[in-house]
Picture (tube, rainbow, N blue to C red):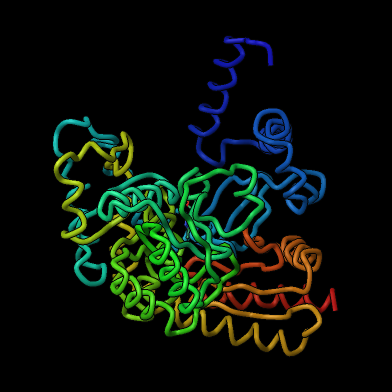
Length: 449
Ligand SMILES: *Cc1c(COP(=O)(O)O)cnc(C)c1O
């Protein structure tokens, strides 16, 4: 695009004006224009590929579906069409969209100080550290805050390398930990990883849920003298399609890591804060990892936030020079306010228990659908409200997602396994909305049967 600074200013001003106006003062014509321009801007300035990939969104009638307002588990597009959010922003919206308590805390903090000076001590970050230390298992006590899940994993990897002095990692097939170069090294799927090789050296992948394979990999690394810093896994694999490991997996990982003197990193970016029916994913098996990574729901679905936490013993290596790992905006006061409010809601409203009960309810219904439509719905799995439905092919999966979308339900495939569609709504979604969602799913399955 040819340089045109005046146009840049005019266009920036136009959108600032629109978002500054109350909802009822953005007219229908203007919303239509926004919907049309969004498609155009995606094509010209973001990535045309998304328009192709999000077919069900772009082919929804005359106007593409353009996200505009959300509240709780309902999304409304720029033209006022409503959708039930069964995707929860891939786990971001555990509290639903714009939870009033989180919004209030962030607005209040916004009126004090949105970012920190970088030099004075910031009370919210320190306080949030204490709160997370109190609610995490075992002797997890010290943490570092960042903005995205992948940054939390990067930090955890650095900490493991600092502490052990070893370079390698054992990661899981189909595992997902983010897409920056370090965390991408742990990725368990070739398509995202292979074009960027060589990534970090010394990463070995083993099948998720197979503790014997982890043991073999640790033994082999030891036998040939390859140093391993940590074993990294999601408690329940999210992007792979809600894969729940056997019950002995995490306890055995703990034993193996202790035996081989290797750290155990639990990537709780998606499973943390109630998603799977316990406060943290590892709580299903009463395991205390050495390092835990958080993200997505941590910021209450209002401010991006992530963190990695560890024990006093391990954290000691960060003390001599605290500048070995830093970020300018991580753990900013707005994000900390959001996280503190998120935790009050998660614990105060017992969202883990809600997730467990609603998850059982949804899984029960889905198993019933599976027995009625076995040709289409081949497998149903998950824990809490991290649920995957598996279809025979990608195409069938896409048809189900598109069918749901045309019936006003937002879902998506999973990233490392396109045959699986997820059901990952807010943990506080009402049973009425869950029933509505299940009715529309049943209708979709019927139409495909
Ligand atoms: C989403 C996710 C990440 C990456 O988080 P981003 O905020 O997208 O960088 C890492 N680990 C797990 C388990 C995730 O689900």
